[in-house]
Amino acid sequence: MDEIQKVVAEHTKLPFIIGYRFSPEEPETPGLTMEDTYALVDALKDKNLDYLHVSLNEFWSKPRRGEADTRSRMEFILDRVNGKLPVIGVGSIHTADQAAEALQTGVPLLAIGRELIIEPDWVEKIESGREEDIETILTKSDQERLVIPDGLWNAIIHTPGWFPMAEDK
Image (tube, rainbow, N blue to C red):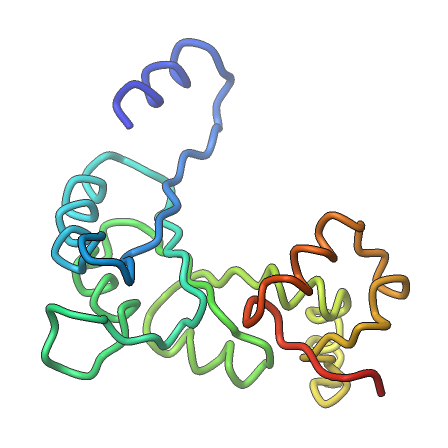
């Protein structure tokens, strides 16, 4: 991060946003643990970053090992950051209610990438009070309607669990 900040200071015009995206824990043993994540967060939180982006498949997922209480990984990370920089949360937030619930943890920002692929009008539907019209599941016939490129579509349909999928309507 020090080298990145040095290069940005020397070669860019401000403002220039610098953040760090990471996955907090790995299922493999050995693999990153929550203890490793805490060490990373501790090292990053004083680096004058603009954000930390915590990449999770499921926002509310619990630590796999190393924690006894029932809070989510996101809640542990927010506690560790202790307000020193904004945290972006992500992970299967499909509806306005789920987004509101996630924001109740204190996370100031949410990423909704998969959701915007499934429902390009996600934000507009919430703003106009049409939350019930938000699509939350892809079907195999949605590729053309949503203009999803072949490469991404193949990754979506060949990675079970990455996107919620249903049979055609």
